[in-house]
Length: 98
Image (spheres, rainbow, N blue to C red):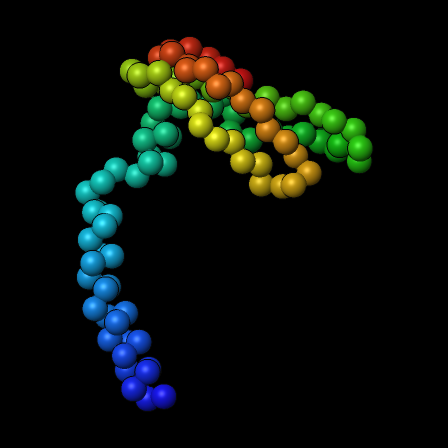
């Protein structure tokens, strides 16, 4: 059992330097890139009280502030009680979308 633990620790240590070099500290964060490319009309919306079983449409308006078209690839609501729909077409520089 002791040999198994030692082997496992050595295996982890042997592969640690390999995985440490995958992401460089110089690479720009994807969150920073997206944050610089989109200007939200409002970053939060007070939806008030929504009665159970009633749908309420909420729109998040934004402007593409980058010099290239933006394509939204995925939207993921944080709650299972909500759904999300979004534009699948490119948003051109300077244009607004919902």
